Length: 202
Ligand code: ADP
Ligand code: MG
Image 1 (cartoon, helix red, strand yellow):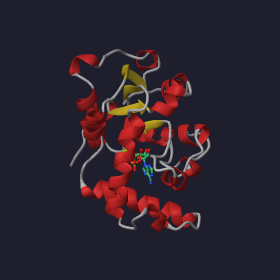
Image 2 (cartoon, rainbow, N blue to C red):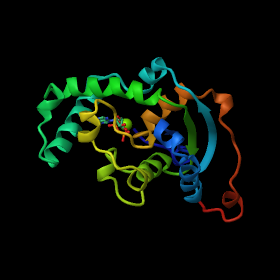
Image 3 (tube, rainbow, N blue to C red):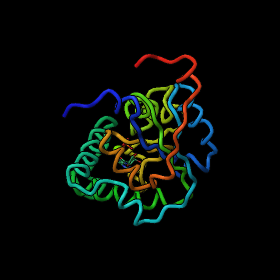
Image 4 (cartoon, rainbow, N blue to C red):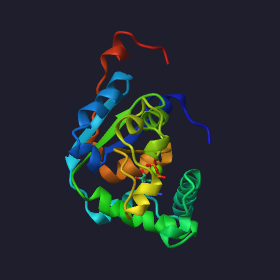
């Protein structure tokens, strides 16, 4: 697939403060990081999600669930822990279990949903969020700076990893999530000052 430069310039991604981020008062901190790097906030809302909504938000395909199982196993092995204590060693079953815990986690308090726009928005916001597992996220990233969790601790307590934010992984994932969480009329258009005053010729 060939991507047009104009589309890349206005690439959009979906960023969501998870309940742990909201109740810890980290919302401003996260928005500040997005804005200071030059990306544009074009939609924002606090809301309480339902279980059905979270079920629609995350992919349902087996590939996605198996990948979560795989990542979990790698994390267990890294710390010399026995993945069998989860009750299964099957990647798909582990993924299904985590998906269930995500419904509990993301409905436990309000969240803040956002659409962020700008060149390479998906990759940049993903980079800012950091590794899924906070113990492996670099310092300087949101997850690295503000959380200490791991798959091993989360799974021992039969819960999802608390990692402050959700960020779309690919432009396709972003499109699905933005369409799902926002109406077209809820997304705003404006020029950030540097777009007109110090315009980078794109
Ligand atoms: P990311 O949020 O970085 O895109 P994934 O899409 O792989 O990560 O997983 C979605 C969310 O599921 C993670 O952010 C995390 O909250 C949770 N999660 C992932 N793997 C596990 C796991 N092994 N145990 C508990 N929760 C997990
Ligand atoms: Mg993901």
